[in-house]
Every structure is written in structure tokens, then in C-alpha cells.
Length: 428
Image (cartoon, rainbow, N blue to C red; front, side, top):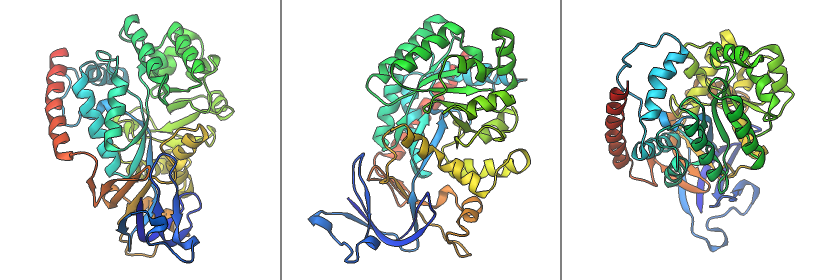
């Protein structure tokens, strides 16, 4: 157990501020107990030993979660330019990301997952929803990622990207990997995007989703190319096509959703599916700007593999949204926190009350319930993350990962990055 002394606790839903000691229980179903609700307090409750952390002057609140991530991109930072300069979104995929994911092997995937989990934890996230692709190392790839995240102490909801872009054999391997993992783990049925998934593969993926009572995790209308392809080949828009397969349930995550018609927005709004926004990735790929108008309230935020810092994602979505979106202070905070509602609504484990972040936020101005959202948008950043508790276990203490040797893993990751870049260069 962990005892957080002298904490300023902020309830993530009501934004109420409570001055209290907090006892944190371990385990997937662990709870948090407040001394403010027990007049006698507790120093060593029930005779159990607790690690004591003084949180004087610190903020304690629920930790964060990533609504859409890409482990496979972790070793991309600093890589060389592609041999052909991409001229559009399809060429960005073809000459950069599809070149990268085809080059991944077991060690590269493991290094990517470990580095990503560490980055999530140090930025205050104890849960990540990931969308993975490694066409030349499919079988067992999700288990590698899961083990790496478990080592660091970050909970997860994984999927493998099913796609026809590498031929039918790879499609079948993707379906098989998905089913094998779904049998024993909480997971989603991942697909790349409508324009790389034909009707036969889409039906097989939908059947798999229904068989295991899961949901889709798919990129939707990230670029106009996706819509143009769907209209030409299927005579309908992307969301209309997906809706025909009855996959828009409460577990389904629709990534990006930039180029939607009013009818598509109505379909999403009247379904139980969730939309995940990825502002910085959209800016980087020059594909357009997200606008939530008409899409309903089931909207959360992701990083799309650009980084693992959800505070940064929220702030960028807010600033860009001033010109292109309908978003205010409460709205961006709701998007930031909606991932918790998604996970709870669908009974996914690993995001309970005993997931906490301690922020060393030293503000030159007062902070309280009434002005908290102003501090959230303009003041908070990942450098203030001091301690992180995941399912009751301290995984970051004084900004240092406690569960693994970070220096050793970073050295391993750098070695794998060099191997990856060499493979990519030879493949292009």
C-alpha cells in the first residue's frame, strides 16, 4: 500500500479540491481511501505497512490515458528522410510509415513498446490504447507489446492492424493474430483504414469482432483519399460502409474523422462508437483540421504515435481548435478525460481509482475549483509529473521509473533504432 500524506486531491470528475491523506490499495480492483473522510485519520491502517510519500504542495489526481497510440513509431525519431519526398498523404504512408512497419522485427517491437510505456508513465499516463502494425512480424507481436507494457506497469488495450495492403496471406495472419490475442486478453479488432481493407476482409474482421464481443479500432477519413476511395469502390462513404457491417458499438474507436459528411456525423452521433482526435499528427501530415460539430459527445484524445504526452495533446487540440473547432475549456478537459469513460463503459480493466499522478505544480497564481481549467490549459505540462501510481503500484518516483532500468532500455532502443533505419534504407 501507498500513503500519500498532505495531498491536495483534485477529483477528476467534479474538480473538487480536498486536503487529505490518501491510502492507495494495490491490485486491479484496488481503491483509494481518504483521511478527510475518517476523522481519526490513519497512520498505519489495519496494521499494514505502507510506503509514505509526502505530497505537501503537490497536486494529486487521477492519472491520464492515451486514446490512440502507435508503439511501432517509437524508433522513428531522428530517422533519415525517405528516398522520395512524399507529395500527398498516401505517399507519406507508402514511403515512410509502411516502409518503417515492414522493417520491424521482434527486438525492434520490444524496444518500441518498452520505450513507449516508459514515455507514457513519465508523462503521467497509466493506460494506453494502441494500434499496432508489423507486416513482416505479425504472429506474437501483440504479446510482445503486452509483456513490455506490463514490465513497466502501464495498462493497455491492444489491437493488430488488419489490412489487405500486403496481400491476402498477411491479411489472414493479421486476423489470426487478432483472434489468438482476443481469446485471452482484453483487446480490439484493429484495421488500418477503409481504403486498404476490401469487403471480404472487412466482413471477416466484423465477424471476429462480433464473435468476441469486441470493437473496431480503425483510422477513418484521416485524408480525403479515404473517402474518395470508398465512394469509387463501394459507392458509399467510409462511415456508411462501416455501418453496413454493424460495427459502430460502444467499444469501437474511430481515429481522426476529419473529412466526414453530415450524414456520417449523424450516424456516429446516433451510434455508440467513439471518435479519437489526433491534432498534432493531422498537422504533421497536412491532412486538415478536426471539427467536432455534429459528431456527438463521445470524443477522446490520442497522440497517434507522435509522442506519449496527453497534456500536450490536449493543449494543442485546444489551441488549434480556436480557429477550426468548437472547443472551450470544459470541452477540451472532457475530451482529455473521456478515455476513462470509454474504458469504464466497456468494463476494460486497468484504469481504476488507484491510478494516480502527483504533479509538482508551482503556480504564481492561486489554483482552485473555479479556475482549474485555466491552469489545465495554460499551466500543466509533463515536466511537473513527480510520481505515478498504476493499479496501486508506484511506477514513477521523483521522476524516475521504478519498474525497469530506463538507461538499459534506452540503450537497447537506440541499438534497435539503428538496425531499423538500416533496414528501411535497404527497403526503399
